[in-house]
Amino acid sequence: MAQVVVYSAPIVVPVTAPVILDGAVAVCEGHVLHVGTRTWVLEILQEELDAAELADMVERHWDGLLTPGLVNAHTHLQYTGMAPVGQRAYESFRAWELAFNEIYDSPEQKPWGQWAQDGARQLLRAGTTSAADIATDMEAVPALSSLGLHGITYWEVMDWENDRWTREGARTLLSQLAEAGQTKGIRLGISPHAPYSLESDPLLDLPDIARSLGMRLHIHLGETPIEGGAIPSKLTNLTSWSWSHRAWQSYLALKQAGSDASAIQFVDQLGVLGPDVHIAHGVYASREDRRILRQRGAAVALCPRSNRVTCTKKDAPVARYLEEGNMVAVGTDSLSSSPSLDVLDDAAMLYELAIEQGYDSDDLSHRLIRALTLGGAEAMGLNCGPDRVGQINPGALADLAFLDIPVDVSSPIGVEETLERFVREGAGTCAATVLSGELAFNEIW
Image 1 (tube, rainbow, N blue to C red):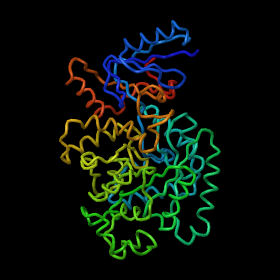
Image 2 (tube, rainbow, N blue to C red; image 1 turned 180 degrees about the vertical axis):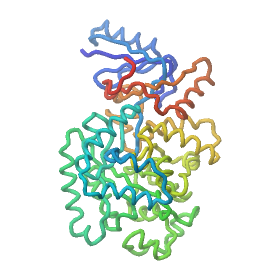
Image 3 (cartoon, one colour; image 1 turned 90 degrees about the vertical axis):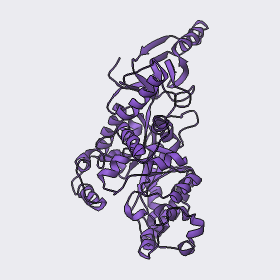
Image 4 (cartoon, rainbow, N blue to C red; image 1 turned 120 degrees about the vertical axis):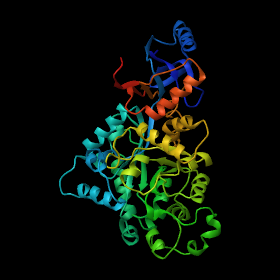
């Protein structure tokens, strides 16, 4: 018999079910036991107590908003100590890159592990319980698992030319994955960095390696101006004949030859994309690029604040992604390119961008709440199964966030305004975070 903790609130947002007023979530042994109205949950628990199926029960009430733990679908926690880079303004992506490299490549020893753990703690304080974290240094690999956070640590692969990759690339990668895999509780993936930092051979091989090992993939794609294409609407099946019939050394070589192909179209020809892949940024994504992502089942982690800091020259087509039905998630990127690790800061910007870009449906808050939770889980393949996240339903992991948001349950309009307030003003309001049923951050009880 086990103890049950009941978390109740005036509004509970399960995401996979309608919003519950005067709701409650019963948690037992790290998973959700029941979710529903507070009256119903307490009644059924009392029946289970009377039948001696449970040891005892305790209730913790919160007079605010209760949601699933948030999901940060793109970050680099090891760069948390490089926050000064992310707090400056740059005239180009290259200028930001040089500022980043100045610290990363400096001879001083960097405490990657400590910085990554500091970042993981910031996630918990912001109500985030799962993340897609990219690591380039072995000391940073344990950051998520060491604090019990869920998600995937993606080992980043970059700066490989074809010849060197053929000689030693796969062997080096497998050795690195074996070392990283010794971390207790780790869930590993592979991150081909970007089509401008890898030539064609590694981009061809990395998806095969990941899929043979049962790992997922995460790639920076459509982030920089060079990755844009000049064919915004036609099917690539009709327009790629001029370049897709021959093997190109790299995407950069293709562009230098005068091709108008986008980076998304290029990696699609190499078989990189699929339902086991999610991309970061997706700023330079035409209508045809977005169709490709939908058809391949690849989600997009939108990082609007990072795109401003790194000066990518434009914003992602947020409204078009939503209107056309692309799978979207939300990421902060790292503190080297973003002011905070709170995904609700990015959600607020996405809300404004969608409106500016003409999104006029009345479901915008709901769409972004999904992106902040279930959308991020879906991007990493963590939306189903016994350890599913980004949702509140029986059997799911008991990952919960408690937000200090003024709640109005006096009318349907009041509830909708509360949800909109959560998306637009929720950053910095997390008062407690429950991770696998345990309080991981607490300013309430």
